[in-house]
Image 1 (cartoon, rainbow, N blue to C red):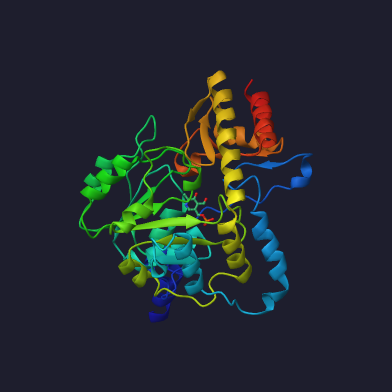
Image 2: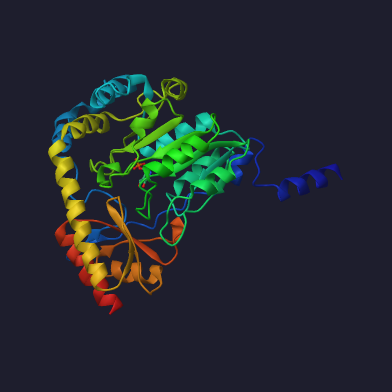
Length: 378
Ligand SMILES: Cc1ncc(COP(=O)(O)O)c(C=O)c1O
């Protein structure tokens, strides 16, 4: 009898190994990407779906990586301390070395932040539609996601909604500025109202990975708020303007107190040698940064004009991408575009059903996008 009973219990719970953590079991697994399309199917292929820099990587970074390639049999000479020193110089010592958190991507900085600051039952506020990995990273630590969506029709930030959602369990408020996928932004006034209204111990994770593409005068920059001593952690990446998405490098900066605490989450040789070398060079390559900004700003203007002339709904964007909507199912539209070698992203997974997110590309890519879109919707 005893045996039968224990066998029954085991079979009912056979997926639950006693060492499994409840919060990891309960977490929503991050959606797997579809396989990369076979680019040889088309004469031209334009990947305008992941907000990378369509101008490519910083040429200086690429040259430095090539020169360092033979040396990769060794562990990195560059460590987080040195990287943080380089970043502090890049910020003219307005932010000091120990205030930086360096990691192998922006996403890994988010993991470090949540590992350090989210406990089982902590509430974390996000505002959908937004960057989808936040949810999984929060849940893996046992955090509870509280979604206070952006306000329709213009996807503006809901300061009052967020403040009203704060409880004594609130740990972090994630502000994605400019927001992905909408390209919309919280203004300086809105961000300051948020900071003023939050209890002192709530931390704001300020994801400004697209800040290089901002041209709005009333955009709030994390640096000013960290320098003033607010509990803000900024998030930055080398995947966007610097064109190093495949190398995986990112960083954040925060107050000395939070920086000292989060830097205890240490892993030897966290960032690869080539990625670190590329990051150092990319930071210096202002020519590449300026040319990339110009490409995005001019491309955006051209696309807005086309959208306006053809009555296509879009949301003015402060990022290197723009979200638009046509009267067609977004999954069908993206699939039809991919059949013709233009890859764009449906907004559905972000919480913007029916919308499409387009990464601004070179003139040639933008023109091809437009040609293919018109062919489908006409
Ligand atoms: C809003 C936002 N935050 C963070 C990231 C993370 O970038 P990465 O992990 O490539 O550094 C991305 C990438 O697309 C993003 O869109």
